[in-house]
Structures are given as C-alpha cells and as structure tokens.
Image (cartoon, rainbow, N blue to C red; front, side, top):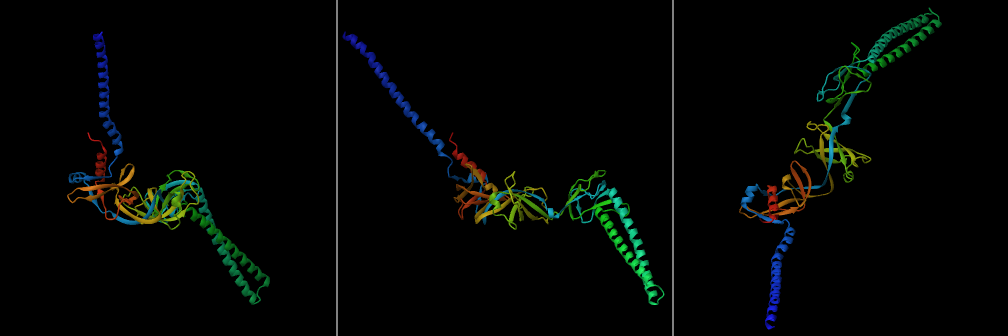
Length: 406
C-alpha cells in the first residue's frame, strides 16, 4: 500500500512541476514581448525632428547654400484672379452704316491702323441714294443761288428807278418781295445740301462711284475682323474692332475683404504668366456696385499703362491687393519655401565653420510670389541665415531622419 501511494504521488508532482515550468515560460515570453510593443507604440509618436546636422558632404551633394534674405516692409496682401481686357474708352467696334455687300477688307487681326484709314469697302443701295440726293441738292442750290442773284439785282434796279420817279412804288415792293423769297429758297437749298452731305459722310460714300468706305475712328491695332468679302451685312453689324493698346483694363474679381480697401485711384500690382518675373501696376478706375451672383465676387476695373506694348488683351493675370498694416517681411527664392507637415517651412542654418551646418526648420507665413521671389512673414529672426538653395535636399534629409532604421 505504501508503494501504491508513492507511485500515485509521482504523477501529481510531475504535473505540478510542468505547470510551474509552463507559467515561468509564459512569464518569460511576456517579459521578452513587452519592450517590442513599447517601442512600436513609441515609434509613431517620435515624428520629424525640429533640427538636424548636415555634414560638409551632405551640403556639397545637395547644393545647399545659405545666406541672409533680403528684407522689405509691406502690408499683407490678397491674391486675386484677374484678366486683361481692351480699354473700352479707346476701342471702336466699327459696324456697317447701312445694309450692303462687302466688297473688300483691307486689314487682318494684329494690323496697326491710323485714324481715317479705309478698312472695309461696301456697296449699298442706300449709298447710291445718298449720293444721288447730294448731287440733286447741289444742283438745286446752284439754281437757287442764281435766282437769288437775279432777284437782288432786280430789286436794286427798281430802287434806283424809284429814286428818279421812273417806276411805280408797287413795282419796287414786288421786287423786294421777290428778293426775300429768293434768299429764303437759297437758305433752304443750302440746308438740304448740308443734310445730303452729312448723309454721304456718315455712310462713307465715294463721290466717284457711290461705294461705301468704312474708316477707322481710332489709331490702334485690329483686334478682330468679322467682315468677309461677298457677304451681305445688315445695318450695325460688327465688321472690324480696333483698339488703342497703349491703355488696357485689368478686370479683377475681388473678394469682400479686398473690396473693402479698393476704391478709385487705389494702386494694384499684378503679373501675367506669359511674362514671368515681371510685375506691373494698375490704377483702379471703378468698383462694381454689387457682387456677381455667379462668382460672389465684386467686379473691379483698373487702368494699365501699356506704352511698351508687352501686355495684350485676354491675358490671364494674378493681382495683389495690400490689406492691413504694413509690416516687415523677408524675400526669399520661391524654392526656399518647402511644405513640411502641410505647412510652409524655411530652413535656418547655423554654420559650423567646417562646411557643415546645424539646420532648424521654421514654419512661416508666405505672401505673394513674384519674379521667383516669395515674401515670408514670421519664423525667422534678424541676422539668421536661411537656406536659399538646395532646400529640397534639406527637406529630404529631414524626411530621411524620420524613417525607422533598417
């Protein structure tokens, strides 16, 4: 019985030992797993560092160059969409003065023309009628002038005869009345000739063949040509548009905030993609009275002096309007500003004297970009060196420092 009890106790002891070893193994495994989980939880929280050290090799390889940015004093600006348009005060849309057939077109879009130059030739029944009326009025005037001359002479002779009592007073009075009637008829004929001459001039009728000539009313450039030889046009139909491009309009879609500071005479800066690096100025001419219901923007027109002729109508533009108080700003190359964590950032460098540098990233507020230069507000103190070239390489180093090893 004692042996049976001993034998029955061995399995229990073995089971107990196995349970102890299993628990110890589980505890050991838990102890090994804990640091890994803790490290995995800490890794995402580490984020991108605020600063890093660039070696001389990294500076040379990335083409990194730093320096003191240029400073300026200006107000905060709003960037607004705009476009250039012909100055309507210096533009003429020339239309057909009467119904007729287009005989010839002497210009093409882009041609320079002078005031009074013939642009389009037309043939019209109205022109023939106007020419005939003018010739008739001229002939009638000549007849009336001759009658008036005879009546004046007859009156003068009757008055001389009356003085020597060689004619009755009744005959003198009749001669005087005839003279008055002749002068009135002459004045009427002169008025009719003036009317016919005005009609001929308005229609541009040629005295030689009765054709019509459409002449430019301004000196400028042909913007468009709708006239085609052989077509029949109605009165008022647009044929040619000419504009003096020495002055243009800048049409701006202004926001509520910009509209609050814009008024006639205000200065506006703008640039066009077709002329990169150049900035132009315009003077506000008018501010709309209500918002555009489609765009919810206020239409603003500004006058642009274009004596150099580099700007053209229908060019898209970006306008900048100063708002708020003036404050200090820095002007840096456009590529010196990089996006980190979704924020505009510049890199401030502190050289180590050996070709390397300690670089700190600074979030900034950016303003307008013109001529490849961007305005930067805040984030950089006076006398601090900013990475002006190779900023993308520095950004890559910051991104690389965020990546886990291996």
